[in-house]
Length: 198
Length: 258
Image (tube, rainbow over all chains, first blue to last red; front, side):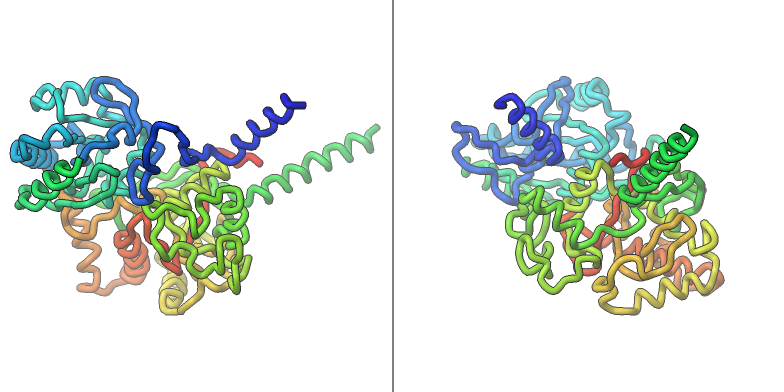
C-alpha cells in the first residue's frame, strides 16, 4: 500500500509539471529567497570551465551582469571593455564580494570551450569573472528578467540591448546602466555600496 | 465479425478525433513569409510546420492551472514573475468573480503564460509562427494584401474591451484557428526580440520602416500599419507586465499528446 502511495505521489509530482520553485526547505538556509530575486529562476547554467551551476550559487555576492556573444565584432568588445572599466574602479576593500558575469546570448556557438578561449584572450579567466551559457529558452527567460532584448539577425550576428545590470546580495536588481561607453560612476557607486553591506 | 471490426475502427477513429479536439490544436503547414519586422533585407522567413491552439487560453482553463500550481495564484506569484496587476480582475485566487469563464484570460505575465504552456506539454508560439498563422483569413493563408482584412483588424484596434467577449466568436481562419484578431493581444515566446529604441545596429533600417511608415501611403500600408501596431506593442512589453488586453495561446512543434 505504501509503495502504491509513493508511486502515486511521484506520478502526481511529475504531473504538476516540474514545480521547480517549490520552497527549498533547507535547514541551513537562513532566509527565504526574496520575491524579486533572480535566485527564483530554476535555470541551470554552465561556466567557461564546464561547471554546472544555478544562479543561486552566486548568492551572497553582488552581481554585475551583461549579455554578450563571443563572435560579436561591434558592440560586445565595447561592452566587455565597459565591464573591465567598472571592475578596475571597484573599491579594493569590498571587491571580493563582487562577481562580474558575462552571459552568452548565443549558446549554440558559445560552448564552454569557446567561452574559455574568449576569457583567456581577454585576460578574464580568473576571479571575479564568470562566463555563463544555458539553453536558448533559459537564455530568453533570463533576458526577459533583465529586460534585455535580443534577436538573431544572421547565423553569426545578433542585435541586443547594451545593458549592464547590478544585483544586490539577495539577487534583486538594483541598478541598470544602459548604452555603450556611458558614464559609469553611478554603477560603480551602487556596486560598492551593495558590496559594503555584505 | 465484420461488424465488430467496423465498430472497432469507428471507435478508434472517433477516439482520434476526440483526442485532437481535446488537445484543442490544429496543424499549421510550413511556409515562408516576409514579416514586417525581423527579416533582414526583407528576405522571407521560413516557418516549419507547427501546431497552434484553436482558441486563446480562457479564464476557466487558467483557473484549473492555478489550482494545480498555487504558486501562480494572484496572491502568491513572486513579483519577479508578475507585476501587481496580475489577474487583477479576478475576485480572488480561485474565484473568477464577474469574469466570464469562457473569456480569454488576460492580465497574465509572460512568465505565467510560458509556465502554463509548459504544463500542457506545449510552449508559447514564436513571433514568426504567430504572425504566420495570423495572416490567414477565412479562405487563404495570406490575406495581408486584402483591404477588408486589414480594415477588419484595424477596426478592432479601435474597439474597447473586446477582451471581455467569450472566445470563438470572431472568424475561423484558413487553419481553423479563432481569435487571432478581434479579441485580445497575445504573448509570444520571443516578444523581447524587438528593438524600437534604435539601440541595435543592423535593425536600423527596419526601425526606419517602423517609424517612417506614415510618410507614404500605398497599398501595403494598411497591412504594415496593422502589423506595426502589434510589433510596437510587443516592443513596449516587459515579461512581468500583466495588462488587461493581453492573453496568450500555446503552440507545439510536435503533435499534441493528451
